[in-house]
Structures are given as C-alpha cells and as structure tokens.
Image (cartoon, rainbow, N blue to C red; front, side, top):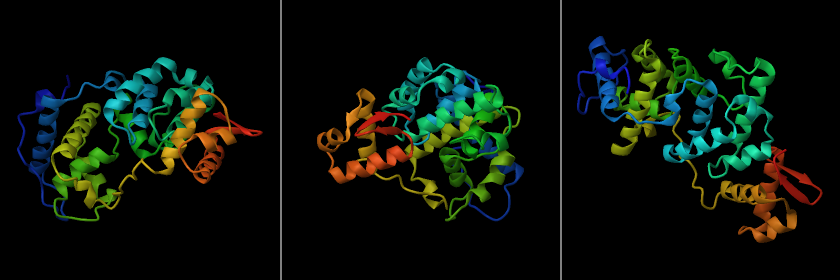
Length: 293
C-alpha cells in the first residue's frame, strides 16, 4: 500500500529514547524511523483521503479530523464531497446548505471557516490552492498543522508540522521523562527524521503509529506544554448550540419556540442564540431565526 514498506526491516519492540539535550545520533534516528515504518507496513489504514492528492479534498479531511474521530469523518467526508465536489461548488453554496451537510460533526465553526476558505481561494487565488505555508495560513481557519497537511499529502512537500498524533510519537520516543515539552523542542526532531522523498507516506505513518500509541499507552502528550483536556459535550454550551443548529437545519423557528421547546433553560438558549448570531452561523430576522448568514 505504501512505498515505505520496502525500506522497513522490522519493528523494534518497545523502542524509546530518554530525552537529553543532545540531538539523537544517526543510529537512534534510524531505529526510530524503522519503528514507524514497520508499524505502517503492517497496520496502515485505508482511508479515503489517502487516495487523492487534490488539495481541496485534503483540506476537507484535515478540517474534519480536527477534534472528530476518524470513523465519523470517514462517513461525513463522502457525504460532504458528494454535496460539494469541488472548491468552486463549495464557494458558491449558501452557508445554510454547508451547515446542514455538516450536521453530526460538531464544532460547526469549522464548516463556516471551510466555506470562507473556499470563497477566498476562488476569489483571491483563481480557484487554485497556494503551495506555500505562509500563504495558506492566511486563509480562514487554516493554521500551521492544516497547512502542513495540505502541502505534505497533496504535494508531497517535505514541510515540518505538528499535530496531536505526531506530537504523541515524538513525546514517547524522545522525551520519555521530560515534562512541559514545547513544540519548539519537537520541531527539530520532526525535521531531521522527515522522509523528504516520501513525505506523504511518512506523515501517514506517523499518524497511524500515533493513533496506535493512543490506544495502547498512557498519553505522553500530557507532558506537553500544549496539552489541554477537551471539555465534556454533555451540559456544555456546545450542546446548546448544537441543538439550536439542528433545529434550524430543519426549519426556521421563532425565539419563543427555541426558548420553550429545547431542553435547556431560556437563559442558556438566549446566550447561545446571541453567540451563534455574532458568529454568523445563524441570522435573526425579526423574532425568527434562520440557519446561515
């Protein structure tokens, strides 16, 4: 399935480094890359976004995979691309249609940012995705991690970036006993270990190996300076917002209907309505609310 497998001699069980101030030796780097390659050779996931180099489809997958499990994304990814097969069709679509298609993913601001990015690419870049990190991160909702994913997976460019699974791999192997590790300390290791010829496969391998570590060991990312715990959905403001958006995805409703029919206090519904309106995810027309802006 991947070009890395032919260069992988075998897994090194339980291999990890104890962190020190020195960069790893060539022998240590080789042992590390062999471990990652070997896991990918045996356990590479067959994911739909790995069968394309279209930067638009890569962008959709990268945005969806933020804070959402792979299996849910696998389903919604196909649905979303069926509704909006190109960046141009997404750019022309009403936001309300985009939000309706996004339902079930949560974090609906991602859908709005994705929509705004599509419009910016069509408007400012003639429908073509920029091929450099500096320009990509100027687009709505795109940070270094998403931009790096687009460049690596769509163009096989040897960029250096970090996301949760990648951080987990390097924390486990190179910072075994260290706490408060910043991404600035990890980035040089990502750079020197990157497979510059097969970057696309290398980052896929890191992602799959990082997912494996998440399922089998205590999370080393807890020792990262950037670690934060995701708040529970139940009882959160996200739950109220999601309920309002689901209701408006079916039809427009009055303020009174939303405040009396949803299973939350009127105060919480009112607060969520104000926030959603401010973010242009919904629009108030008189005493009625509609999805989109």
